Amino acid sequence: MTDRETTGGAPHDGAPRTALVFPGQGAQKSGMGQAWRDTESWALVAEISDHTGVDVEELLLKADDETLRRTDLAQIAVFTTEVLAHREAAAAGLLGEVVACAGHSLGEYTALYAAGAVPLADTARLVA
Image (cartoon, one colour):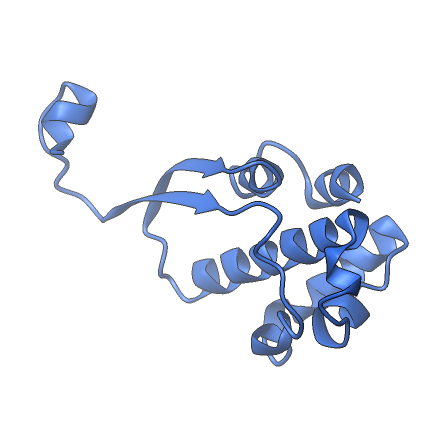
């Protein structure tokens, strides 16, 4: 669809516009944090652990698939990974102008955070 069809206005000539969509529970897997371990955003893992009382680093790096089937652990692991991916993409300048954030089920919480509607500490506590 064109900008005219979706907004009823003239085509957008500025920077690329981005819509972010975050998955829900079911996206978890063993070792899911490995790709983010050496990034600047990894400090968020300790921050989220502090807010929730959950050892998120352990979940992201060492938890097996059986452990990650537990809803209470899977959800904070998926949320944290989504936050890491969002932060790294933003820091790398890959997002352009974010015009919408959406999520499926659990991903709705990440979307609220990414949109700036709910602070990280509050979102992490809601998810945990």
